Length: 126
Image (cartoon, rainbow, N blue to C red):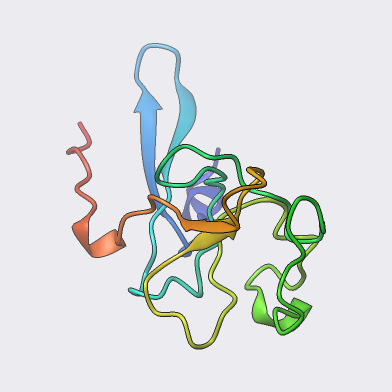
């Protein structure tokens, strides 16, 4: 990996770039976090809620029909399909963080456990 490639790491998430000194291989340890409290910019891949429920795909209507106001332009990925089943906050009025519809028919939606980047502590690189 070149230095230029290393600098192209996404600013949407906090990435720790670790180098294995023995093998000379580059590894990425992805620690997704939200830049803002509402998390509308979040592009990470967390797909379970705080209580461990699997997230429903945003483009699916099973088991829950998504709110029709959550149109493609509300997703930082560019569309509901591209957002897959990842935790997001496409609701302009919701400020409590990223969430998802769940695959549990008895639980429509739940918040996801995605920390704020400002509260993420990265270990020192050696």
